[in-house]
Amino acid sequence: MPWARTALTPLPEAVTAAAAAAASDSLTDAYSAVWTGLRDRPGQPVLVVGGLTHGLYACAFAAALGSSQVVYADSDARRRRTAESYGAHTVDSAAELDAGAFPVTVDASADPRGLAAGLRATAPGGHCHSVGIYFEPVKLPLMSMYMDAVTLTTGRPDITAHLPAVLSLLASGQVDPLPVYSDTLAYDDLPEALLDLPAKPLASGRRTELPAMLERLGATHVVHREETGFRYYSRFFRADDRGLPVSRYWPLTHHDSVSVITAPGDGDHWSVTLVTSGRDQALRRLSDPGVWDAVLALYPEAAHWAEGVPDGDVRVMGGTGTTHRRWVSDGEPLVTGLVAVGDAHMTLNPQFGMGMTAGLGQVQVLRDVVRRAGLGDPADLVLALDSELEERYWPTWNDGDTWDRHRLAEVDAEIRGESYSTDDPAWALRTALDTAATLDADVVRGFGRVASQLASAEEALIKPGLVQRIVELATGRPRYAPGAPDRAVLLETVGRLA
Ligand SMILES: Cc1cc2nc3c(=O)[nH]c(=O)nc-3n(C[C@H](O)[C@H](O)[C@H](O)COP(=O)(O)OP(=O)(O)OC[C@H]3O[C@@H](n4cnc5c(N)ncnc54)[C@H](O)[C@@H]3O)c2cc1C
Image (tube, rainbow, N blue to C red; front, side):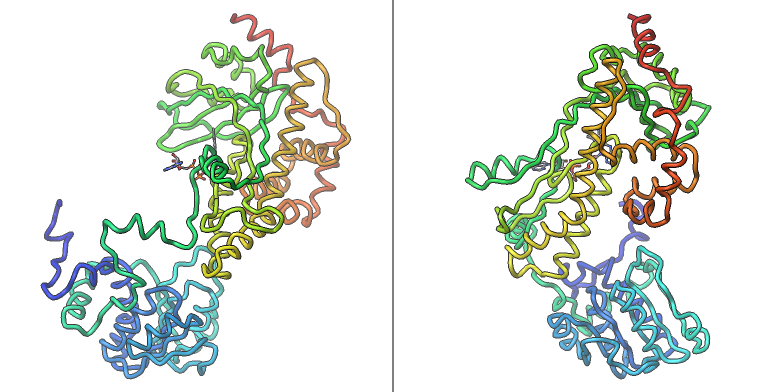
């Protein structure tokens, strides 16, 4: 261990490893949350708005640091019992408490409503510390905080500075973290314990073996699988002294029988992909780096993405079917004790770069369902998750699937030298959007919000009234932006290098 004397803090004899398990994290975070307020207000009452384990530790430290009264607010009965074992008086909700009653408050709720309740309960001149991490901006009652001189602090804890004080409170027996733990297990018993969880989230990816395993057990699952039939020819590059290429437009552009993806990556690397139909035999020669380079040079918005050091040859990928799975049939779970998220639940066309965001969104949905429905009834959990995932993600998958079908039909028509037409208004609007997004900043912003899964098409395009503008901008314009090669030029370029 480099710089061990500085980096490590010795564990006192009287403190077990189990008791100190959270000392370099939530335990010391909770200590400093309470200490920050009590330091200048010794002995004063403390309110803890609970939710995270930090809140329970905060009760124990508030009592140990000499607070005259510790009140713990939380709707969870089990956590309230633990807080009571630390000598706290407990209430269901901080809203029941008088405003401005506590000189020291701790928000350990990770919920904007908990933070608001904690601030409301903070006395004039008092101190509120929030240990909950808020990923989104949160409203603050700055006017009343200003008038009452309420101080709010938050931030990652300074663990090393507070660790000796925390360990000394543990060693003296004034604080015992063990009642907060749900269980204490030997390290070697962990795999078994994890298998005993009431619901195991499955995230084993697009090639998950689970459906086959379940079928062997006699359970069936509903699978919608579509072969997208696209073929991807990618090259990777690393920056030379010219640096990273500049993005001139959206990273995915469509042209006559080819789409182009430019994807900046980490460490000054990037990839460029030429996407064709899997049935496009003439363009299979894109696997040759010389042909690939010559074809990329034909696309004005993307040609400069070859200005770097190539990393390897052309990598070819096909057979990326999109899949959507459900584990419920006729309103009954096909399997309990197991829930699927990410690519194990559904895969999207990789052209759109949406898979990771969708997977993380599904994990959030799972978290919210578990929070709401609990883990008590395994069937309820599967049904609740299925219904929520269907509502949130089936439209995304279905839209992607519809796009795939139309685009492949369009490319296949172009290979035959025909232009594609369909009476599906959804496709007309999608292609109009491709055109309008090159012409109008509001449209490209709305499009970006949908593609990044920050908003639905309804929120980002329809409600702001952009549909009319999209149609107007695209009317009378060609399907593809001018300047890029048509099929004849592509074939001529490929043929010339044969
Ligand atoms: C070519 C391509 C390009 C893509 N580009 C993008 C992009 O630009 N942006 C984007 O957001 N998404 C993109 N995606 C999609 C994204 O990669 C996936 O949606 C995402 O990785 C899914 O995450 P996951 O955790 O569900 O599955 P995975 O990332 O596949 O992880 C599953 C893991 O489980 C492991 N595993 C499977 N079975 C077992 C087992 N029995 N025991 C132990 N381990 C097991 C696997 O080895 C794997 O490591 C792309 C996908 C492809 C194919």
